[in-house]
Length: 277
Image 1 (cartoon, rainbow, N blue to C red):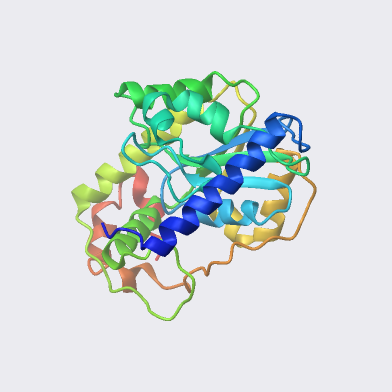
Image 2: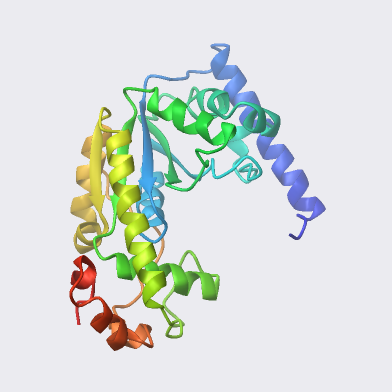
């Protein structure tokens, strides 16, 4: 991984110092600060609209939204200046990191603070990962946005295309990705795993304030969907835009080189509904 230039290192250091001074001043009462805001988490899987949603929310004047900040113990989110120099805390005690560096005091105009996390982030078979999920589950007022995409074939397709092009966030529609090949066994394993994860995390957070966000509904009416989510988070309605482009609609058969064979394979299965052509 390329190392940041000296200029970038200095700039990051200055930004971290500025954020540190601001937060310390709020903690000391020297600047107005607020910790009585809505805490939320966006749970789901890649390619289900999480970037669309979180970028939109982060463009709201009263929301502080972070990305994938607790992926693993070795993935400290150093690009966020707000977390100052807290890598040691992040690695040692992720729950304390979330409590003191993420859900900390913010300027009084902030009404909601949250981040996104995918099912496989913070692996629960590790002590570090359990620390993350146990902390979230222990917060009864934490509001949960659970992102789902009904057509799991399109989720798999989008993930494979993004992986091959290394374009996980799309800012323009200049270039279309090439068609991909999806083996039946790969598709079935993906459908089953994602379905199981959705049910598992619905059950885990059943006792929390919960809002299911369906990708197909959100993209069909983005302004309306965002208004509903803003209501759920208790923030005033604002017209916000994610700053990214949705890929133009293309047929599944033009994007999957073995689409017909795949459709035939799943014809008599619960997954047949994903093959819409």
